[in-house]
Structure formats: C-alpha cells, structure tokens
Length: 331
Image (cartoon, rainbow, N blue to C red; front, side):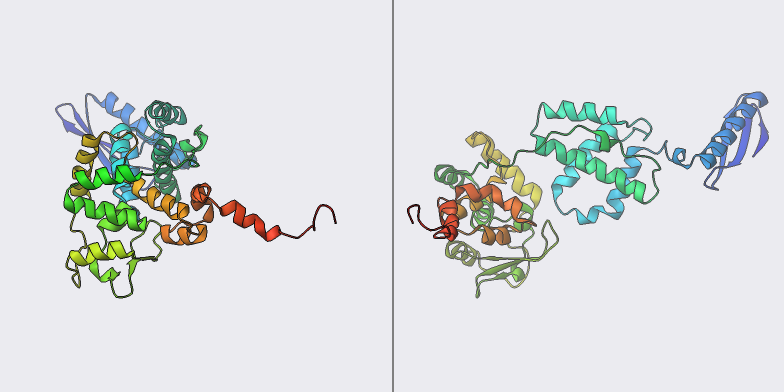
C-alpha cells in the first residue's frame, strides 16, 4: 500500500485487496487521517486472507440476485418467479449478507404468513434460499445460508377447490372472448396458464387431436389429447402453420382476467383453479389417476394423489383384487 499527497487536504491510497484487485481511493483530511484509513484497509485485507468467509460479507443481496437471474434465471419460465424476485429485491436488495440474518428472514416470513397462504410464502423463501445457495456454489458469497434455520409452516395440499358448473358459466358470460378461449383451453386440458399462452400452432395437431408441449414447468416434453369441444374451438380460430395460438401476452391476459374476477367477486376464484377443475372432473368422471398424472405432467404420483378422493369408486374397485384371497368366513 502507499499514500500519495495530492495537496489541498487530499490523499490517494493505492492498495490491493485480498482478491489481488487494485484500488485507488481518495481521502480528505490530513496525513494522519489517511494513515488510519490505510491501516484499516490493510487489516481488512489480512483478515480476509486468514478468514476467507469474510471476503464476501459485504456483498449485497441485490448483487446475488442479479448474478442468479443473469446465469440461471432463463430456466425459470414462469413470470411468477420474476414477480417474486421484484418483491424480495425491493425488501432486501440493499442488505449486505452479514446483515441478512436468519432472524431478519424469519421476521419477514412471519409478517407475510399472516397475510398469505403457506404455499405462497414458502415459494418466496425457496427463491431466496436458491439465490444464496447459487452464490455459495459459485463463490460469490462465502458463508452459510440463513434460510436453513427458518421455521417454515407445512403446506396443506390435500383439499382442492374446483370450479362449479355455475362458476364456469359465469366466467364464460363475463370473460372477453379471447380471454375465455384461454380459460376454456385450460379447463379442457389442465394446462398451466404459461403453457397455454406460449402455445404455438405447429405444436397443435388437429389431425391426430394432440397438443405437444415443449415449454413446461419441468422442462420435459408432454403430450395432451384434444377433446372434441376444444377441437371445435381451435378450428373456429382458423389454424395457421406457425405463430401464437392465442395471441395474448401474460400481462394482457391477466389484466383482463383480473377485471372479470373483480366483477364476479367469487371467493377463492383464480386462474389456477381451471387446472384443478380439469383434474377434479377427470377423476369424478372415472378417469385413472396414472393417466391424470401424465396429462398434468406431475413428476410423481404423490402430487396427483390429492385428486384421488374425488373418484367415487377408486377404493371399492381397488380392494377387489383381494377378493377370495382368504376364503369365506364359514369355510
């Protein structure tokens, strides 16, 4: 390190940090003040060499978030993750990692928990945890992840609300025609909103009545049969060889759909209910749970089992495999 007198009460400190990066900073005052500053910088560099975990304690959460979404964010296809990112960045963006403690995050979690469902809040904490883990993996932050100590509420996914026939009729009567087409497609296929809005005509086979999804949540190809009523709607839209099927952006669709929901004022009504409704009616109409898993694109059958109780006969039919195994009571 060196100190250079620039005159008029200005001094230039030239030093190299623990990462071998050169810095030049100006200090106002006298030489004694500059000397103290130089001593602190030298001691900090020495400590970081001896204790590597201290090197990145002053990195901000915003820097880690930017790093994560720059290198990995393209894999997160849903706009939901981007919206969550904005909310978290606004709250913790200026926090250094030494200040972003488990106590701070637990207080934030407890605050949100009084306003939102556990699943919603847990997704926020999952994103924070993923961003910090990614930073640790790529040595952008040397330390422990404060999320590992959080007390998180379990999620209850057993009970599933679905749209009644009357509610579906209300949506049909009140949605804008182009918005209703998206909603109707979701009801007929169980597809997610993003999957529908990103659907291209070349992935719709109206000869073999099949939709091929390439952009899915799990990044796995999925094929969905087309119901006759959905085919009728698609044919009325004058199919093309390429281009977007529905021609709506995420923002345009949600803006109109939310206005409709506000007008109807039906408790618990949201777009994702169309997916639950497809699954619920599929099971109530006698569909197989394994077929439903494949159509919905669930990675495990456990995710699909939440709908199994809606099948009127699934337990009665299942237990018939034991018929006659132990003989009759009296023989």
